[in-house]
Every structure is written in C-alpha cells, then in structure tokens.
Image (cartoon, rainbow, N blue to C red; front, side):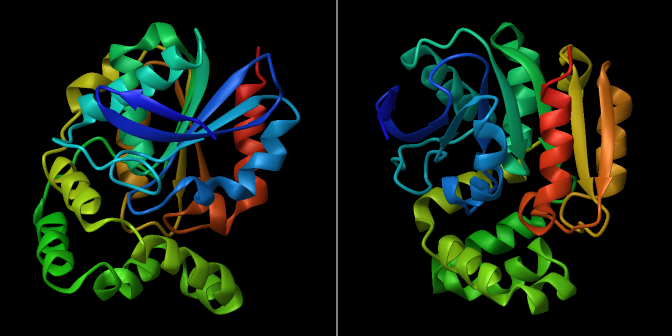
Length: 259
C-alpha cells in the first residue's frame, strides 16, 4: 500500500484487483477510510484494477491543509500521475461524489465514466457542519458518532446489522479531528452547481430512498444538470454501498462495463 506525495501531503493508497487494464478509483465519504469500500472490492476486482485512498485528514493520510474541493481533486490527479494511470473510472460517495463533480468538470480527460453516489452539489445551510465543528472540537469525534450512524443507516439496518454499524462507528470515531474539521469547513462552502453542465462524461447518480443527508431531490437536480447522467435509486440511507451492497455493486459494475 503506497504513500503518494500530493504537494507535501502523504496520501495513503491501496491497490487491488487486476495488474493492468481498466482502473476504477473509489473515494470515501466524510469520516471514513478505505475500509468503507470493502463490500465492493471483490465485485470489482475481477474486472478492474481497484484503487482506494484515504482523503487527506483521514485514515493513514496526512492532515496538511488548507482544504478545498480543488485541493481534494488535485490529490486525485497526483495519485493518477504517481501510478502512471492516464485514465480511470471514478466512484465517489458523499464527499467522494463532490470531488468527482470537480474532477468531471476540471480533469475530464483523466476519467471515462463517473459514479456519484449519495451526494449533492450544494450545501444551502452550512449550520450542520458548523455545529459539527463545534461539537468535535469541544468533545471529540465520539460525541457525534451515534447521530452520524443514525443518518448513515436506516433503523432497520442498524438493528439487523449492529456489528457492521459498530465497526463503522469505530472507523468514524478514529478520524483525526483536524482532518474532520478541515473537511467540514470545505463542505460548509460547497456550491458546485455551475460545474455540473461542464461534466461531459457519462455519469451514474446513485441515491438512497431514505437518505436525509443527501436527498433524492438533490440527486434529481444533478441528474437534470449533468448532460449525460442517469440515476438509480436504492432502498438505503446515506451509506448505500454498505447497506445495500449487492444492488449497489450490480449498478456500479453494470455502468462501468458499458461500451
């Protein structure tokens, strides 16, 4: 698992699957590490070289700031350049989907197909992230972990798969406070609505029927604004790749394998 330098910040990268051929990059949500994609790796590895990475401020990557979506996008380009990958597919969930919008508009020559899952292009009310900054700065990541799990998973899933939820909670709680705060600050300023018409690659938008963090309405707005976008709806809350891994994988692989 290499560490790649992105303008002085080490970015932790994991590579699975094929040694050559088509590549897909997986980009995490806020407060998670590459482990959030474990339900997808086996399904993708038969067809693709699978690259996961910890966003700066998360997991084993550095916490160097300042943070912005341009910075997050340039980190991805640095990964591609360091691994000598000319073009790849993209799948980003939540914050990863926001990075994917920036890449689709500003680095379209590096990507073939783009999947934007459980995400939005605009945070109209920054209060949610400002409140999180205050809470974790004062009381640590664990202080908001239960509330975050309630937004990430439906009540039925939390009861049925308590072990997965607890593991996810531990991953979230271990996020460096500096990294989480920096990302929340970037999220509080998010407005990429003007970028969407510039995303000219084929796009699949995946939304969760029960997602209150990034709603179906927000997904539909993006579908209409992106020239070549389709949309699929899953019976899940925010982390749809974890809550509904099989339909998520079917939609993802099917879209990426299209000619």
